[in-house]
Image 1 (cartoon, rainbow, N blue to C red):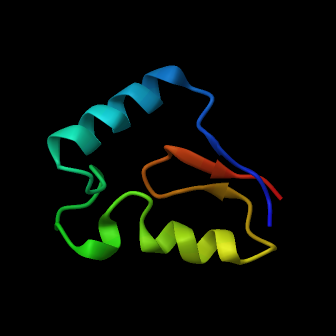
Image 2: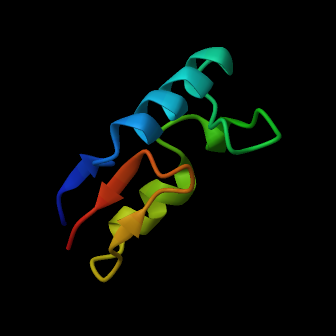
Image 3: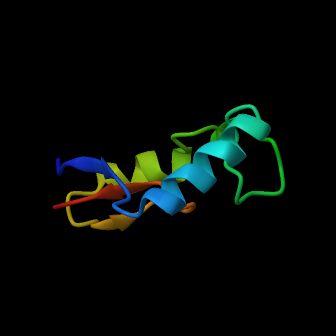
Length: 66
């Protein structure tokens, strides 16, 4: 499995963290409060399980390197 890191853009990280705080841990980019949208969301967990995936999570807080 590749390395997971925060986005290198501190402004994006700060904005997403503010959104997470305001939404009680739910992804600020989603409109619904579903358990699968709690950070780290299920979509990204599934993506990081794929050894061929490299990229950002939906809200761009995390990045998975190969």
